[in-house]
Amino acid sequence: MHTSRWTIGAIVAFVGLASCGPTNGDGHSDTAAAARAAHAAGDSRAMQARAVWEAQLDTLDMRLGALDSAVRTLSASSAESTGRHETRAEAQTRFAEARDSFKRVELAIEYYTPSAGRELNGPALPEVEDGEGPEVVLEPTGFQVVEEMLFDDEAQEIAPALVEETATLRVIASRAHTMLAAQAVTDDRVWDAVSLEIARIMALGVPGFDSPVAGHSLREAASALEGVAATLNVYRTDDGSWRTLDTLVRGARAALETTTSREAFDHFDFLVRHANPVAHEIRARRVALGIGLPTERRAFRLEAASLLDSAAFDVLAFAPVDATPGTPAQVQIGERLFADTRLSGDGRRACTSCHLVERGFTDGLRVNRTRAGAPLLRNTPTVLNSALQVGSFTDLRVTYLEDQITAVIENVDEMHGHLEESARVLSADTAMRRQLHEAFRGTAMANDTVVTGAQVRHALATYIRSLTTMNSPMDRALRGDTTALSAEQRAGFNVFVGKGKCATCHFLPLTNGTVPPMYQKTEVEVIGVPTAPVVAKGRIDPDEGRFRITRSAPHRFAFRTPSLRNVAITAPYMHNGVYRTLESVVDFYNRGGGAGIGIALEYQTLPPDTLGLTPKEQRELVAFLGALTDTSRVGRR
Image (cartoon, rainbow, N blue to C red; front, top):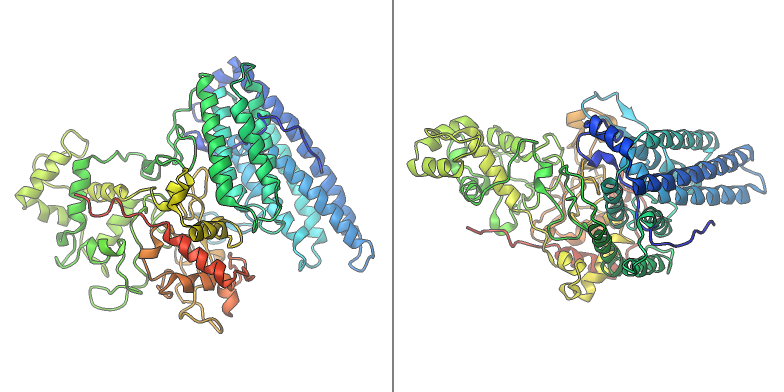
């Protein structure tokens, strides 16, 4: 395998310019005049960084060519050929080399050409173009598709398709090279790309999100670090100030090279002692050089050093573009409204009727009841940390909290009210009207005479966003207070990220399905939830999930990947509340989801194989899930 000199600059990787304010989807900022000016002026070191990237893209092209040649040789050999095993092994080696080359330039591809990044390295699953109709289903392309064909021992007669996919890889990589050459590259964005790549390594790379079959995630994370280092190397000064970062990078790489087994790897130790310090020292180098930050808003704050920082996330990045930060007065009145039955049509229900504070803002029921007493369709989810996702409801049928509030209040089976009618009723309450008037004084929603539906909705959304906190025992431990986790919980964390593969869907640190590091999309998954908590001969729950919205086959029985924060206090589980304990949920996943209990689904996205977790590992995993509890924002006045 190819090995490169381990220079400090090589330890940061690239992320998508889609994070850099309004773009056209390929990293081209709408502020075209500014981009052209920056391109013309050219930050000299940034231009050197781009030269490094272009050289790495040349290497990627060469290695893709070698992969293409090996795959064609494999395709030409017969299934009975005595040399077929060796030919397949050669193709796997060429694949691994090409992937390593991609990882070294991943930072630039993802930042400046995100559409090419998705095509080169997206999940090997069909993607539905939401809003385009049920017939618009995009088949996957890229490295992960090739990986499944090359490394899945059960794959049959895949040679022609493998040749086609490998050829497609070369075309996409060439397009990325062309697109990158047209981009304005400036110092602030180079360092932003580096920060995002470290986040990607922590949340996607090391957990194995994009190497699910070959299991090369640790080695590839080292290659991504090498790409970061090569980028930063052009900014190096000779005053000795880079020694700390050099030491941290060497330590991070050494940790990744101690084993190729994700099951044996100490993920907790790597994040705490290596990845997080690297992220903070990179910020320190940027600040020391006097390099600023881009100005746009995104979920992972530009000023944050690491995803693990206590203030790493901006909840308003998940809100409508005209949303404003809530004031303490607006939060307080939103909390009052959350418990106010006047929001319902008959004056008998409030939000707290289903979202009980003492149960982690759930109700403890498998499903609640309609106003008429019939069972509701789905389990009541918690609203804790619900602001940190793109889309609401388990089928993602609305985008923002504000829309969810309207939908629940006006749902005939839930509250059967109307925002404007509720506002009219509240206007008759002199004290309430006065408090709302004071809370919105001087804002665009101010109204001196009456309560408005917009005020009610904004206050409720502001209150729910205030129920966001990142200070669970897991958070404190990952920031360095290692005593916050017991030995069993720490072992469970490593199961969660490693053998259990939980973090490949419940992404760290949010533990929901909103994809890092850009957090622009929340995933839905088909896991095969049964109607009853059986371990064999299961029957799929008839609720078809997101399919009811999109009518696209890959979305049949698909549901939003929820946050696991506070999961220990929000039983029962799944969209239908079928499992009453975390132990039963872990057992379901350990068996391979629905496929493991006899439910055959065409589009199950959860790997159908057993995880092979021992009883001890299952107990450790459940113990870790308890370390995600944080109710510090609950019940405050």
